[in-house]
Amino acid sequence: MTVGRSGITPIKQKNVQDILSSRIGKCSGIWKKDKDSAWYNQEDKQNTFIDFTAGDMSSDETSPMTFIQTLRKYSYFPSVLYLIEKDRKTFQSLLHNIRKLNVRTNYNVLSPMFKDDHDLCTVDAEHCKVPPEIILKNMDLCSFLGEFQGYHRYRFGLAYYDPNGFKYQDFKCLFSFIRNNPRMDIMMNINATQIKRNAGVMKCKGFAKYRNISLDKVIKSIAQYKKTVFIRNNFAIESDFNPKSTHKFILLYATNDPNQKMPDEFGFVTIQSEEGQQLINKYNYGSKENKHSGAVCQPV
Image (tube, rainbow, N blue to C red; front, side, top):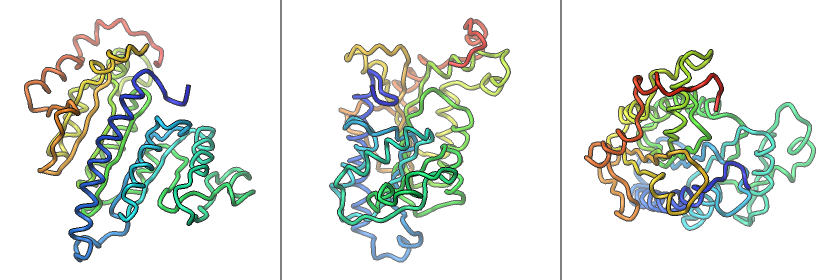
């Protein structure tokens, strides 16, 4: 089993493939129309795509592979892809698997990925060669997003976040990024079960900040910065695949594009719709339920 792979992985990757293709197609259309406009060229590399939790890319059913294959179809379209992975061994595998791809024959040498180690880039420069449109980062999400400080009005693209569990600090950093990049869409998988478990561990040291967090509040926080928020119940869809996972996942897509539509076959509803409200209420866990959840003081 690859890093982070579960019974729901095929569904997640189909989501990424379908939605990413749609979004990149739209961004390339904007580029074709406005590439010569002064306003469109006020920032370098404004067409940005990010996989915050890349993993090792050890199979075709991984989000980095989906990003790369989709961007290949739009090779004329100037863009940059960031692949972020905080685990060192996983990042080494990601780097190795990236280099095996014949994405382009024009390679460049990146700076050392491991500042404290004398391996990879510092020993053998060949291990640093990756396609120039791909930037690899071996760091955690908050450290990476620290490089994106400030308000970026003309940056277009899509950021994908598929974490293991629910981490309070990561979401705080992500909210800041969403606020500062209004034209970038956000797609993320939210583990509603993990939010409930964390919120239920009310008397444990280090979990106090989770007490008042719920699925509803997470979605509302994102909706502060995005005009339209689509959600889908991945748990209901995944039941057809009979996975072993008992966690309930909500797929969220947030955008400021007033013309953004989701094809019916994607299965999305807006958070303002009756179906959306029913879905949020079904998997939202308030403080009353948390008090009786019976959670113990162990991180899960």
